[in-house]
Image 1 (cartoon, rainbow, N blue to C red):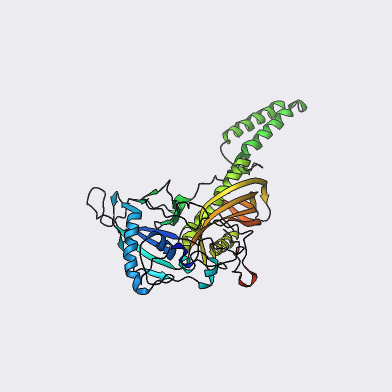
Image 2: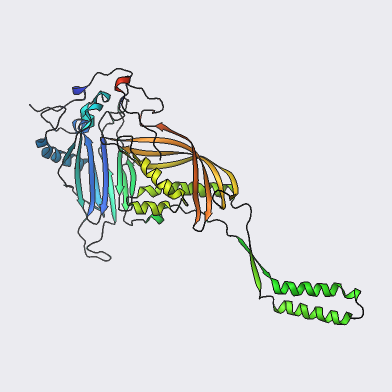
Length: 447
Protein backbone atom coordinates (compact mmCIF):
# COMPACT_ATOMS: atom_id res chain seq x y z
CA UNK A 1 0.00 0.00 0.00
CA UNK A 2 1.37 3.40 -0.96
CA UNK A 3 1.11 6.24 1.54
CA UNK A 4 1.28 9.99 1.27
CA UNK A 5 2.43 11.03 4.74
CA UNK A 6 0.83 13.82 6.71
CA UNK A 7 2.54 16.12 9.18
CA UNK A 8 1.39 14.08 12.16
CA UNK A 9 2.27 10.71 10.70
CA UNK A 10 5.54 10.37 12.56
CA UNK A 11 5.22 12.91 15.37
CA UNK A 12 7.46 11.88 18.26
CA UNK A 13 7.01 12.39 21.96
CA UNK A 14 9.64 14.64 23.50
CA UNK A 15 9.85 16.38 26.88
CA UNK A 16 8.75 20.00 26.68
CA UNK A 17 12.10 21.30 27.96
CA UNK A 18 14.15 19.47 25.31
CA UNK A 19 16.36 20.97 22.65
CA UNK A 20 14.56 21.10 19.29
CA UNK A 21 16.42 21.25 15.99
CA UNK A 22 15.92 24.56 14.14
CA UNK A 23 15.07 22.81 10.87
CA UNK A 24 12.41 20.37 12.06
CA UNK A 25 10.29 21.03 9.00
CA UNK A 26 10.34 21.18 5.20
CA UNK A 27 13.74 22.30 3.98
CA UNK A 28 14.90 23.57 0.58
CA UNK A 29 18.42 24.42 -0.54
CA UNK A 30 19.20 25.74 -4.05
CA UNK A 31 22.63 26.13 -5.65
CA UNK A 32 22.92 27.71 -9.10
CA UNK A 33 25.98 27.53 -11.36
CA UNK A 34 26.35 29.57 -14.54
CA UNK A 35 28.86 28.52 -17.20
CA UNK A 36 29.23 28.49 -20.97
CA UNK A 37 26.59 25.77 -21.33
CA UNK A 38 23.88 27.62 -19.44
CA UNK A 39 22.49 27.34 -15.91
CA UNK A 40 22.67 24.32 -13.62
CA UNK A 41 20.60 24.03 -10.45
CA UNK A 42 21.44 21.66 -7.62
CA UNK A 43 18.31 21.40 -5.48
CA UNK A 44 18.23 19.59 -2.15
CA UNK A 45 14.96 18.95 -0.32
CA UNK A 46 14.09 16.73 2.60
CA UNK A 47 11.25 14.21 2.72
CA UNK A 48 9.25 16.67 4.78
CA UNK A 49 9.34 19.15 1.89
CA UNK A 50 8.31 16.45 -0.57
CA UNK A 51 5.40 15.36 1.63
CA UNK A 52 4.08 18.89 2.16
CA UNK A 53 4.46 20.15 -1.42
CA UNK A 54 3.98 17.21 -3.79
CA UNK A 55 1.54 14.32 -4.09
CA UNK A 56 4.25 11.72 -4.47
CA UNK A 57 3.23 8.52 -2.65
CA UNK A 58 5.70 5.95 -1.41
CA UNK A 59 5.42 2.58 0.27
CA UNK A 60 6.87 3.49 3.67
CA UNK A 61 6.25 6.71 5.58
CA UNK A 62 9.78 7.26 6.89
CA UNK A 63 11.80 5.66 4.10
CA UNK A 64 12.38 6.16 0.41
CA UNK A 65 13.24 3.01 -1.53
CA UNK A 66 15.86 3.17 -4.25
CA UNK A 67 13.34 2.12 -6.91
CA UNK A 68 11.24 5.15 -5.99
CA UNK A 69 13.97 7.64 -6.83
CA UNK A 70 13.35 7.74 -10.59
CA UNK A 71 9.59 8.45 -10.42
CA UNK A 72 10.22 10.90 -7.58
CA UNK A 73 12.71 12.70 -9.81
CA UNK A 74 10.05 13.09 -12.50
CA UNK A 75 7.63 14.56 -9.96
CA UNK A 76 10.26 16.97 -8.66
CA UNK A 77 11.17 18.13 -12.17
CA UNK A 78 7.48 18.87 -12.72
CA UNK A 79 7.20 20.71 -9.39
CA UNK A 80 10.26 22.91 -9.90
CA UNK A 81 9.27 23.60 -13.52
CA UNK A 82 6.23 25.30 -12.00
CA UNK A 83 8.04 26.72 -8.97
CA UNK A 84 10.72 28.70 -10.81
CA UNK A 85 11.18 30.21 -14.25
CA UNK A 86 14.71 30.67 -15.53
CA UNK A 87 15.29 32.88 -18.54
CA UNK A 88 18.65 32.73 -20.29
CA UNK A 89 19.33 35.74 -22.50
CA UNK A 90 15.64 36.65 -22.36
CA UNK A 91 14.35 33.20 -23.31
CA UNK A 92 12.53 30.94 -20.84
CA UNK A 93 14.23 27.55 -20.74
CA UNK A 94 12.58 24.25 -19.83
CA UNK A 95 14.72 22.22 -17.41
CA UNK A 96 16.02 18.74 -17.99
CA UNK A 97 17.14 16.29 -15.32
CA UNK A 98 20.91 16.09 -15.09
CA UNK A 99 22.53 13.45 -12.88
CA UNK A 100 20.22 10.77 -11.40
CA UNK A 101 18.34 11.73 -8.25
CA UNK A 102 20.25 10.82 -5.09
CA UNK A 103 19.15 10.12 -1.55
CA UNK A 104 21.18 11.24 1.48
CA UNK A 105 20.20 9.56 4.72
CA UNK A 106 20.34 11.68 7.86
CA UNK A 107 21.83 10.69 11.23
CA UNK A 108 19.26 8.66 13.15
CA UNK A 109 20.63 9.85 16.49
CA UNK A 110 19.17 13.29 15.68
CA UNK A 111 15.62 11.94 15.25
CA UNK A 112 14.58 12.67 18.88
CA UNK A 113 15.37 16.34 18.32
CA UNK A 114 13.05 16.54 15.32
CA UNK A 115 9.78 15.70 17.11
CA UNK A 116 7.41 16.71 14.30
CA UNK A 117 8.95 15.18 11.19
CA UNK A 118 11.53 12.81 12.64
CA UNK A 119 13.71 11.11 10.05
CA UNK A 120 11.78 12.84 7.27
CA UNK A 121 13.40 16.13 8.28
CA UNK A 122 16.83 14.50 8.08
CA UNK A 123 16.56 12.43 4.89
CA UNK A 124 17.50 14.46 1.82
CA UNK A 125 16.89 14.10 -1.89
CA UNK A 126 19.22 15.87 -4.31
CA UNK A 127 18.51 16.51 -7.98
CA UNK A 128 20.31 18.36 -10.76
CA UNK A 129 18.39 20.50 -13.26
CA UNK A 130 20.03 21.84 -16.43
CA UNK A 131 18.85 24.94 -18.30
CA UNK A 132 20.89 25.07 -21.54
CA UNK A 133 21.58 28.47 -23.07
CA UNK A 134 19.83 29.28 -26.35
CA UNK A 135 21.82 28.41 -29.44
CA UNK A 136 23.95 31.27 -30.74
CA UNK A 137 22.07 33.11 -33.47
CA UNK A 138 25.15 34.24 -35.32
CA UNK A 139 24.08 37.84 -34.94
CA UNK A 140 26.36 40.76 -34.32
CA UNK A 141 28.64 40.21 -31.37
CA UNK A 142 27.64 36.56 -30.81
CA UNK A 143 30.04 33.62 -30.75
CA UNK A 144 29.36 29.92 -30.59
CA UNK A 145 31.23 29.50 -27.32
CA UNK A 146 29.88 32.59 -25.58
CA UNK A 147 28.23 32.06 -22.22
CA UNK A 148 24.93 33.60 -21.14
CA UNK A 149 24.74 37.38 -21.13
CA UNK A 150 21.89 37.48 -18.62
CA UNK A 151 19.97 35.03 -16.44
CA UNK A 152 16.65 35.75 -14.73
CA UNK A 153 15.60 33.71 -11.69
CA UNK A 154 11.86 34.12 -11.03
CA UNK A 155 10.44 32.05 -8.16
CA UNK A 156 6.66 31.47 -8.12
CA UNK A 157 5.84 28.81 -5.52
CA UNK A 158 6.81 29.63 -1.95
CA UNK A 159 6.10 26.69 0.33
CA UNK A 160 4.88 27.24 3.88
CA UNK A 161 7.76 27.47 6.36
CA UNK A 162 6.38 24.91 8.79
CA UNK A 163 9.55 24.97 10.91
CA UNK A 164 8.50 28.39 12.19
CA UNK A 165 6.30 28.35 15.34
CA UNK A 166 3.80 30.74 13.75
CA UNK A 167 0.16 30.14 12.84
CA UNK A 168 -0.46 30.52 9.97
CA UNK A 169 3.09 29.68 8.86
CA UNK A 170 4.90 32.30 6.79
CA UNK A 171 6.08 31.56 3.24
CA UNK A 172 9.53 30.02 3.05
CA UNK A 173 12.47 32.16 1.99
CA UNK A 174 14.31 30.52 -0.89
CA UNK A 175 18.04 30.67 -0.20
CA UNK A 176 19.96 30.50 -3.45
CA UNK A 177 23.74 30.33 -3.74
CA UNK A 178 24.78 31.63 -7.17
CA UNK A 179 28.20 30.83 -8.60
CA UNK A 180 29.27 32.38 -11.90
CA UNK A 181 32.87 31.23 -11.76
CA UNK A 182 34.11 34.21 -9.77
CA UNK A 183 32.75 33.06 -6.41
CA UNK A 184 29.55 32.41 -4.50
CA UNK A 185 26.85 35.06 -4.23
CA UNK A 186 24.23 34.31 -1.54
CA UNK A 187 20.72 35.40 -2.56
CA UNK A 188 17.32 35.31 -0.92
CA UNK A 189 14.12 35.13 -2.98
CA UNK A 190 10.91 36.02 -1.17
CA UNK A 191 7.25 36.61 -1.93
CA UNK A 192 7.97 40.35 -1.95
CA UNK A 193 11.16 40.06 -4.00
CA UNK A 194 10.90 36.86 -6.04
CA UNK A 195 13.30 37.79 -8.85
CA UNK A 196 17.01 38.23 -9.41
CA UNK A 197 18.75 39.02 -12.69
CA UNK A 198 22.39 38.14 -13.24
CA UNK A 199 24.30 40.01 -15.93
CA UNK A 200 27.06 38.39 -17.86
CA UNK A 201 30.30 40.11 -17.00
CA UNK A 202 32.16 37.97 -14.49
CA UNK A 203 33.97 40.28 -12.10
CA UNK A 204 37.57 39.68 -11.07
CA UNK A 205 38.34 39.73 -7.38
CA UNK A 206 39.96 43.16 -7.79
CA UNK A 207 36.66 44.50 -9.16
CA UNK A 208 34.66 43.01 -6.28
CA UNK A 209 36.81 44.53 -3.56
CA UNK A 210 35.93 47.94 -2.16
CA UNK A 211 38.41 50.72 -2.97
CA UNK A 212 40.46 51.90 0.01
CA UNK A 213 42.01 55.34 0.41
CA UNK A 214 45.77 55.41 -0.12
CA UNK A 215 48.09 56.42 2.73
CA UNK A 216 48.98 60.14 2.60
CA UNK A 217 52.02 60.71 0.41
CA UNK A 218 54.98 62.19 2.29
CA UNK A 219 55.72 65.83 1.53
CA UNK A 220 59.03 66.20 -0.34
CA UNK A 221 61.02 69.36 0.35
CA UNK A 222 63.87 70.19 -2.04
CA UNK A 223 66.73 72.31 -0.73
CA UNK A 224 69.10 73.89 -3.31
CA UNK A 225 72.20 73.45 -1.19
CA UNK A 226 74.63 75.21 -3.55
CA UNK A 227 72.43 78.26 -3.92
CA UNK A 228 71.69 78.28 -0.21
CA UNK A 229 75.39 78.14 0.64
CA UNK A 230 76.31 80.96 -1.74
CA UNK A 231 73.37 82.99 -0.50
CA UNK A 232 74.53 82.64 3.08
CA UNK A 233 78.08 83.64 2.02
CA UNK A 234 76.73 86.73 0.29
CA UNK A 235 74.67 87.62 3.36
CA UNK A 236 77.72 87.26 5.60
CA UNK A 237 79.78 89.52 3.34
CA UNK A 238 77.08 92.18 3.27
CA UNK A 239 76.66 92.10 7.04
CA UNK A 240 80.41 92.50 7.55
CA UNK A 241 80.77 95.57 5.30
CA UNK A 242 80.64 98.14 8.16
CA UNK A 243 83.42 96.30 9.99
CA UNK A 244 85.98 96.41 7.19
CA UNK A 245 85.97 99.88 5.68
CA UNK A 246 89.29 99.34 3.89
CA UNK A 247 88.08 96.47 1.81
CA UNK A 248 84.43 97.40 1.63
CA UNK A 249 84.30 97.56 -2.17
CA UNK A 250 86.07 94.19 -2.49
CA UNK A 251 83.64 92.52 -0.10
CA UNK A 252 80.64 94.12 -1.80
CA UNK A 253 81.83 92.79 -5.13
CA UNK A 254 82.33 89.32 -3.70
CA UNK A 255 78.82 89.39 -2.22
CA UNK A 256 77.32 90.38 -5.56
CA UNK A 257 79.23 87.59 -7.32
CA UNK A 258 77.99 85.08 -4.72
CA UNK A 259 74.40 86.22 -5.19
CA UNK A 260 74.76 85.89 -8.95
CA UNK A 261 76.14 82.38 -8.66
CA UNK A 262 73.37 81.43 -6.20
CA UNK A 263 70.78 82.47 -8.75
CA UNK A 264 72.53 80.63 -11.56
CA UNK A 265 72.81 77.43 -9.53
CA UNK A 266 69.22 77.57 -8.19
CA UNK A 267 68.03 74.57 -10.22
CA UNK A 268 71.05 72.39 -9.55
CA UNK A 269 72.59 70.54 -6.59
CA UNK A 270 69.25 70.09 -4.81
CA UNK A 271 68.77 67.69 -1.87
CA UNK A 272 65.31 66.18 -1.14
CA UNK A 273 63.93 65.72 2.39
CA UNK A 274 60.68 63.84 3.20
CA UNK A 275 58.37 65.17 5.87
CA UNK A 276 55.34 63.33 7.25
CA UNK A 277 52.34 64.94 8.86
CA UNK A 278 51.82 63.43 12.34
CA UNK A 279 48.08 63.19 11.59
CA UNK A 280 48.07 60.53 8.85
CA UNK A 281 44.29 60.47 8.34
CA UNK A 282 41.26 62.16 9.76
CA UNK A 283 39.28 59.99 12.18
CA UNK A 284 36.50 59.56 9.61
CA UNK A 285 38.95 58.54 6.89
CA UNK A 286 40.75 56.09 9.19
CA UNK A 287 37.51 54.39 10.25
CA UNK A 288 36.36 54.20 6.63
CA UNK A 289 39.68 52.72 5.50
CA UNK A 290 39.54 50.02 8.19
CA UNK A 291 35.91 49.06 7.56
CA UNK A 292 36.56 48.72 3.82
CA UNK A 293 39.63 46.57 4.44
CA UNK A 294 37.65 44.47 6.91
CA UNK A 295 34.74 44.03 4.47
CA UNK A 296 37.19 43.01 1.75
CA UNK A 297 38.67 40.43 4.13
CA UNK A 298 35.33 38.61 4.18
CA UNK A 299 34.74 39.12 0.45
CA UNK A 300 37.98 37.27 -0.27
CA UNK A 301 36.41 34.05 1.02
CA UNK A 302 33.55 34.22 -1.50
CA UNK A 303 35.82 32.67 -4.10
CA UNK A 304 36.32 28.95 -4.67
CA UNK A 305 39.94 28.82 -5.81
CA UNK A 306 42.23 28.90 -2.78
CA UNK A 307 44.93 30.82 -4.63
CA UNK A 308 42.39 33.47 -5.59
CA UNK A 309 41.20 33.59 -1.97
CA UNK A 310 44.77 34.15 -0.79
CA UNK A 311 45.52 36.80 -3.42
CA UNK A 312 42.27 38.64 -2.63
CA UNK A 313 43.00 38.45 1.10
CA UNK A 314 46.44 39.94 0.50
CA UNK A 315 44.70 43.13 -0.66
CA UNK A 316 43.44 43.65 2.90
CA UNK A 317 45.83 41.83 5.24
CA UNK A 318 49.60 42.03 5.34
CA UNK A 319 52.73 40.81 7.07
CA UNK A 320 52.73 37.63 9.14
CA UNK A 321 49.05 38.25 9.85
CA UNK A 322 48.15 37.26 6.28
CA UNK A 323 48.91 33.55 6.67
CA UNK A 324 47.39 33.45 10.16
CA UNK A 325 44.17 35.09 8.96
CA UNK A 326 43.91 32.83 5.92
CA UNK A 327 44.21 29.68 8.03
CA UNK A 328 41.97 30.90 10.86
CA UNK A 329 39.08 32.20 8.76
CA UNK A 330 39.20 29.35 6.25
CA UNK A 331 39.07 26.86 9.12
CA UNK A 332 36.21 28.71 10.79
CA UNK A 333 34.12 28.68 7.61
CA UNK A 334 34.41 24.89 7.67
CA UNK A 335 33.24 24.40 11.25
CA UNK A 336 35.19 21.24 12.03
CA UNK A 337 33.59 20.73 15.43
CA UNK A 338 30.09 21.26 14.08
CA UNK A 339 29.78 18.16 11.95
CA UNK A 340 31.69 19.65 9.03
CA UNK A 341 29.24 22.52 8.66
CA UNK A 342 30.10 24.99 5.89
CA UNK A 343 29.43 28.68 6.46
CA UNK A 344 28.89 31.23 3.71
CA UNK A 345 29.04 34.89 4.69
CA UNK A 346 25.96 36.79 3.55
CA UNK A 347 26.43 40.19 5.21
CA UNK A 348 28.89 42.08 7.41
CA UNK A 349 27.64 44.99 9.53
CA UNK A 350 29.98 47.27 11.44
CA UNK A 351 28.11 48.40 14.53
CA UNK A 352 30.74 50.70 16.00
CA UNK A 353 34.34 51.55 15.08
CA UNK A 354 36.51 54.05 16.95
CA UNK A 355 39.96 55.34 16.10
CA UNK A 356 42.16 54.51 19.09
CA UNK A 357 45.60 55.83 18.15
CA UNK A 358 47.61 57.02 15.19
CA UNK A 359 51.33 57.28 14.50
CA UNK A 360 54.33 54.96 14.39
CA UNK A 361 53.46 51.32 15.19
CA UNK A 362 56.56 49.98 16.94
CA UNK A 363 55.43 46.34 16.78
CA UNK A 364 55.20 46.52 13.00
CA UNK A 365 57.88 49.19 12.37
CA UNK A 366 55.66 51.36 10.21
CA UNK A 367 53.27 54.28 10.32
CA UNK A 368 49.65 53.39 10.94
CA UNK A 369 46.74 53.50 13.32
CA UNK A 370 44.69 51.28 15.62
CA UNK A 371 40.92 50.96 15.93
CA UNK A 372 38.44 49.17 18.15
CA UNK A 373 35.51 47.72 16.28
CA UNK A 374 32.32 45.78 16.95
CA UNK A 375 30.56 44.03 14.07
CA UNK A 376 28.08 41.31 13.17
CA UNK A 377 28.30 38.65 10.49
CA UNK A 378 25.28 36.94 8.94
CA UNK A 379 26.05 33.53 7.52
CA UNK A 380 24.24 30.55 6.10
CA UNK A 381 25.44 27.36 7.79
CA UNK A 382 25.12 24.22 5.68
CA UNK A 383 25.23 20.86 7.46
CA UNK A 384 24.92 17.45 5.89
CA UNK A 385 21.18 17.62 6.27
CA UNK A 386 20.05 21.26 6.20
CA UNK A 387 20.93 24.92 5.87
CA UNK A 388 20.06 27.61 8.38
CA UNK A 389 21.08 31.16 9.20
CA UNK A 390 23.41 32.27 11.95
CA UNK A 391 24.35 35.75 13.14
CA UNK A 392 27.49 36.24 15.21
CA UNK A 393 28.87 39.31 16.90
CA UNK A 394 32.52 40.18 17.50
CA UNK A 395 34.60 42.90 19.11
CA UNK A 396 38.33 43.35 18.54
CA UNK A 397 41.23 45.76 18.35
CA UNK A 398 43.00 46.06 14.99
CA UNK A 399 46.34 47.47 13.88
CA UNK A 400 46.39 48.93 10.37
CA UNK A 401 49.78 49.76 8.92
CA UNK A 402 51.16 51.57 5.91
CA UNK A 403 52.87 49.16 3.51
CA UNK A 404 54.36 49.64 0.02
CA UNK A 405 51.03 48.32 -1.33
CA UNK A 406 48.82 50.60 0.77
CA UNK A 407 46.96 50.15 4.06
CA UNK A 408 46.86 46.60 5.40
CA UNK A 409 45.49 44.97 8.56
CA UNK A 410 48.62 43.78 10.36
CA UNK A 411 47.19 42.36 13.58
CA UNK A 412 44.10 41.89 15.72
CA UNK A 413 43.16 41.11 19.30
CA UNK A 414 39.71 39.55 19.72
CA UNK A 415 37.90 40.59 22.90
CA UNK A 416 34.33 39.31 22.37
CA UNK A 417 32.65 36.65 20.26
CA UNK A 418 29.19 35.17 20.60
CA UNK A 419 26.22 33.91 18.63
CA UNK A 420 23.40 36.45 18.36
CA UNK A 421 20.89 34.13 16.72
CA UNK A 422 20.59 30.90 14.79
CA UNK A 423 17.14 30.88 13.20
CA UNK A 424 14.64 30.72 16.07
CA UNK A 425 17.16 29.41 18.63
CA UNK A 426 19.37 31.62 20.77
CA UNK A 427 22.47 29.46 21.13
CA UNK A 428 23.72 31.51 24.09
CA UNK A 429 20.86 30.09 26.17
CA UNK A 430 19.36 27.05 24.39
CA UNK A 431 16.86 24.66 25.91
CA UNK A 432 19.02 21.64 26.59
CA UNK A 433 17.81 18.04 26.38
CA UNK A 434 18.49 15.60 29.22
CA UNK A 435 22.15 15.37 30.16
CA UNK A 436 22.62 11.76 29.11
CA UNK A 437 21.44 12.47 25.54
CA UNK A 438 22.79 15.99 25.01
CA UNK A 439 23.91 16.46 21.40
CA UNK A 440 27.35 18.03 20.87
CA UNK A 441 27.22 21.69 21.86
CA UNK A 442 27.50 24.00 18.90
CA UNK A 443 30.81 25.85 18.97
CA UNK A 444 30.90 29.56 18.42
CA UNK A 445 32.73 29.62 15.10
CA UNK A 446 34.97 32.37 13.81
CA UNK A 447 33.81 34.33 10.79
